[in-house]
Amino acid sequence: MKKKKNLSFDIIVAATDGDKEAIKKSLDFYDGYISKLSLRKMYDDYGNVYMVVDSELKGRIQTAVMNMILNFEIIVV
Image 1 (tube, rainbow, N blue to C red):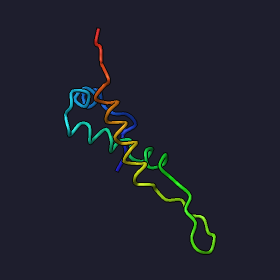
Image 2: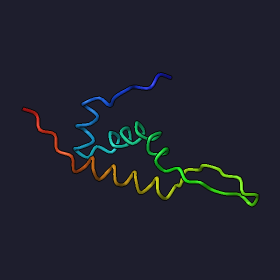
Image 3: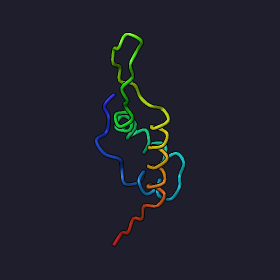
């Protein structure tokens, strides 16, 4: 499946108006980037290092993105 490079303007406008489905599409679009930002080093009993997604941090980032979307103003001239 080919991934789109940008969100459509219609989805952005709907998300800023509070449309739950548009907000979900926006979060899904940025899910990979948010997961990358949420990576943390974890060590096992033998000292091996693993990179894992910190689910609490990911949830906090998603909440912040939702708040930014809802507070975003689009002015069309």
